[in-house]
Length: 334
Image (cartoon, rainbow, N blue to C red; front, top):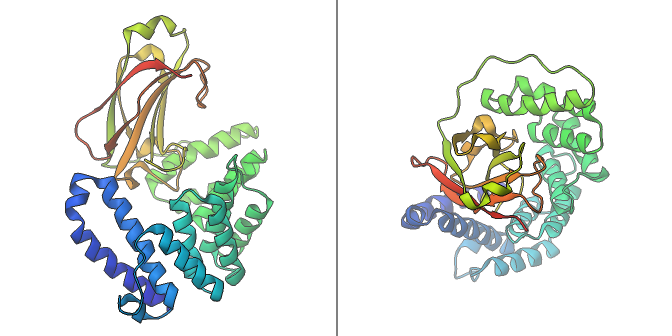
């Protein structure tokens, strides 16, 4: 059954990629959204009937909206809660709507069906953190991650998330110990972003930093950013202010995909964001087709935005754009 689902969705993906090609060229984000919704609805159609004949419109009315697809999935899973792929698809649909609590519960149901599947356990743990208002991994999420690593000791995402949970709990030495084995198995550019996180945890725990690695080649993708400060705000800029230039996934989580921190004294300046500036080994700037770029002058020097900081309006761009993104810091954060 799962093989048929994969084959069906792959076929739909190829067809839609061709049909929606003009949309992708003109409006990439719109095309991605249409494609994602279509895939969810195709999967919902299959699970609503449970047979390949469900792909025949004569057998079942195709859901016209994501809400209809979710309703059909919910009905099918109420009748047959053993469909792991159905719960996964439902969780993705909930996440697309920002319903993180429902996504958490859907994946929790899937775990009851397949309690030893490392990928599923990791997804369920991540969903619990996404549903938490502070994005913290609770005891249940940590239990899931440990169980995943018990089944697959070098599961990269499970190790990364467990390290985050340990650091959230104030166990920096444990976090560093959890992350360090990943350096031997991840790609060099990912290791380059992971190593500073490990060293920060080691320093916090009173341990020496790891030895510096040999330089690695940067990814071909990157975004050149020019940052300027409006003349009207120069008087508001205190000595020692810090500039944060950040790239985020449009419509994604608030955690930056890449960031640079420099002294405000260097303004105006030009810099380049690429995979060497990535903050998460599980997601790199080169993984994205588009990114939202923002710049903020921190009065306090901390990464979390504060009232009174000076900032520029964010700009969306492609990660392979040739022209630089120009950001003008011209407003005070309320």
